[in-house]
Image (tube, rainbow, N blue to C red):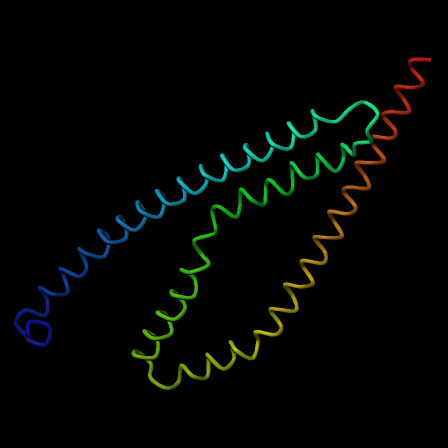
Length: 166
């Protein structure tokens, strides 16, 4: 009743104006806590995986051929990706929910004109998928080039050590 009443409309507006910063502060605190714990978990996962990789490397014998460039790439790239994944894993369920809620609220506010925006978004979906695949291919090429560069660097360092020992 008080929302549509002329006598308490200013009071309602003031309450909303005061509640908005409080809600935003609460949201900021909760989101920061989530990211703190997610990034902490990511650091633990990265450290554990790096430790497991190094333990595995220590089990190799001298006569085994070991690609230390690949190991360095795995530690820096793959472990880093798992670290990032822990921070953004929650987005797998929350992003679609946020999108649906935003579209419903827009539809309630603007009416059927929101359908045009949804159609444009759906029509551009294949473009986004194509760009994502192109970016993934580029990342794979970059990782391969990094592996090759690390192998060449390791070979050059090994050759320089061999020359120094002779």
